[in-house]
Picture 1 (spheres, one colour):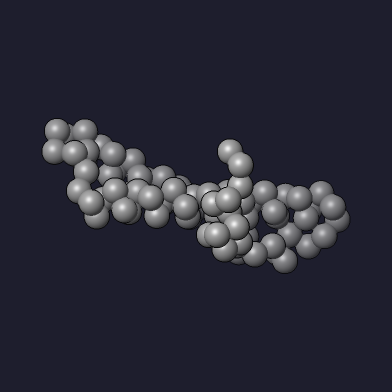
Picture 2 (picture 1 turned 180 degrees about the vertical axis):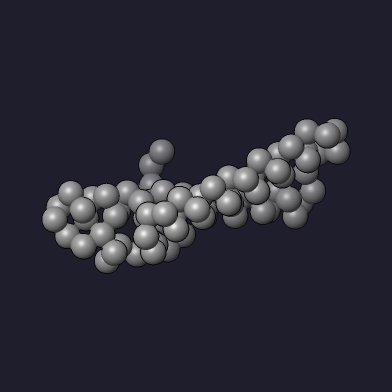
Length: 81
């Protein structure tokens, strides 16, 4: 996956997140399914940003950035904020 593909994924997820929150702002709140989807979006955004950071680190280290791979959810979600 190349940087433009990752940015496209981030933008699509962010757009979906924004849409869900805007629907919640209409006074009806979020359904359980929507809350679950927002949680999934958060995780996928974290993984996408992590992949970008890996690619940048590899590039700076003189390595091939295309060798970076998305890390499992269990790894990314244990990072300290």
